Length: 437
Image 1 (cartoon, rainbow, N blue to C red):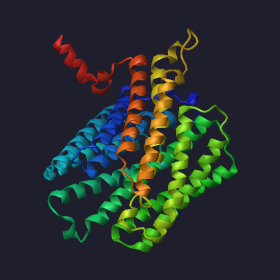
Image 2: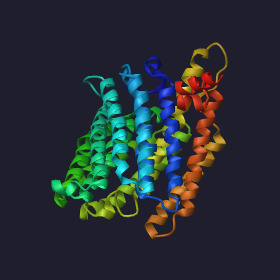
Image 3: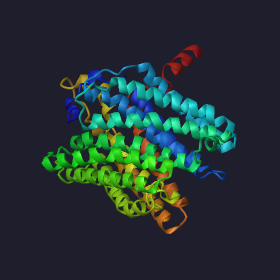
Image 4: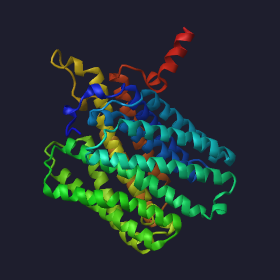
């Protein structure tokens, strides 16, 4: 893969509407997921799925669809599958959430199958796009993450079926154990493996720092321990074996610590001025480090404890929002303007004055959403740890995500060739408007 965006082959990328549609829908699902938490009859299941399967995973789907062809010098296997995967996942997710909120549990299975079909279409499409052999660290992590993305929906469908008609006891499985394996493979497998793989590439890209022998050694440690640790931890939780889960947890934590040391070295050695991307990456690095330190004793002593599913008790927001969330926000602050810039301005370079990639978004709005997100997420984490109400900080965090969404939408509206409606609905919107005319 190329080390810098300037070296990528833009001709390899899919149409800009495909990844951007994923990103816009993902931001919408993030705001919806935050809003659901304030409903009187809010379901934690709906809230978590909107944020994880919706915002984070839909964003990952769009990012992989965009950058695997560009970075790897291959051609996207199927544009139709890339379009279908978003419709299937979004439609299935919204139906699943509506069913859970309404208590109509018999509908969770068909909508869960629809969502699973979208994720499996994504796995097949990107797997066929990845090069055969000679994979670098990022590509290897993406390939491993695709394996997790293959298994997680299967367990999800099994859990959805069990909601309507208890099936797991007939097969000698306990629902909490299957759920724990599902969550472990989803969060630490599919999501975090993708995040670590992307940051191997993006860390160097955005910091322009040099990579040395120490960094290579840390990379080898992480690659050897982290993915294996995820699988072993999930297996131990599935069979209810504390010793097995403890081994997996230890390997996972060692791998993550090695990666954080690698990533911190890139941030400290940055040769560029601070940017919205690097500021959010710095927040994420601190959050991941705090989560690792807090989680190590909890997992090594009681890896099967329900309260330690996402890490040490009270650290779920630290991991998912403070760590993963800020990586996603930071990355999108470059990816969205970059895609728009390539399609709108790259052909004009050298013929007339064109804006820089970072000139496409509003700096003041970027600073405002950073402050709101840090304060909101910090309040959520603090509330979790000391048992205080999280309604106010949760609202501040939602405001931060909304400001971020407004900034991204402004880039698309002011510089993109398509309106937001056309971008999200595509050809369907254009045919509808044409018919009305």
